[in-house]
Image 1: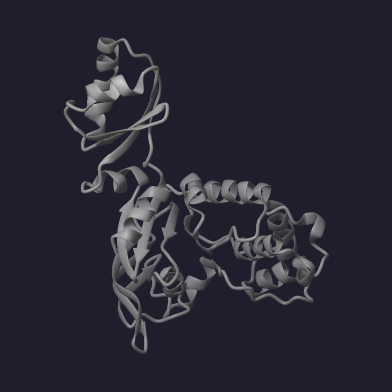
Image 2: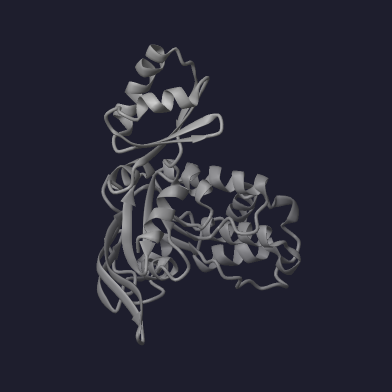
Length: 305
C-alpha cells in the first residue's frame, strides 16, 4: 500500500544541536516501531510529522498534505505525547469529550463513551485525572487521541506506567488499528513489546536512520556479526568438536550442557547439525537462535554508532 507519510531529506536543529539529520523515509498502514536511545530524535520526528514543529530543511507530507500549512491534517492525525500535560482537576470523560468537541466530532458524547470503554476506563470516567496512576493517565491520553478517529496515530512511549494487563490490552488495540488500515507509529524503549506489535521497525541513532525493516531483515543485514545458535544435546563436547570443521561455523563454545555456535551461515549450520549428530550418536534436545531478537539487533545498532 502507498505511504501515508513521506519524509524527504528532513533535518531539524535547535541552535547548534541537530535533533534530526537528513532523514528520508515513508510510513504506511500498519504498526511501525520507532526505536532509539535517548536523544536519538524520535520525539522530534514525531512532532515534525504532527506539524508541531517545522523542519529546518527538507519536505514532509502527511496524507499528501503539508502538516504545517494545511489545517486539514489535524483532523486526521493524533499524537499521544510522552510528557504529562493533563488538567488534573478534569475528569477523564470531560477531558476526552472536550477533545471530541474541539475536533467537531459527530455525537461527541457517544464517541467519548466508546473510546473510554476501548481503553478500559469506563469505570473511572468520572474520576479526576490528577487521581489517576501514570498508566491510567496514559490510557486517558490514548482515548483522547482515538476520539477523533484518526487515520494516523503517533504514540510516544504510550505504555509507560501501564501494568502488564493494561500493556497487553493496549498492544492488542494498536495491532488492531494497524490491521484496520491505520498508520500507527509507536515509539518505545520496551523492545519486547515493540516486537509483539510492530510489523516494521525504524531505528534512529544520533538523529539519523540506523536501520529500517523487519527484525529478521535487519538481522540478516548485519553481515559483520556471526549468528549465535544454541544447541542442547546429550554430548555437547562431542558434537562441538565435530562442528568445528563444518562449513559456516566460525566458533564453538561449550556452556555447561549447552553448545553455543557462532555461524557465518546459520542456515547451512542448522541443516548440517542433524546429520553430524546422527553420525556421532548424539541426540539433539533443542536448537534455537540466540540473537534474533529485537533487543540484540538494537544493541548492535547502538554499539556501532
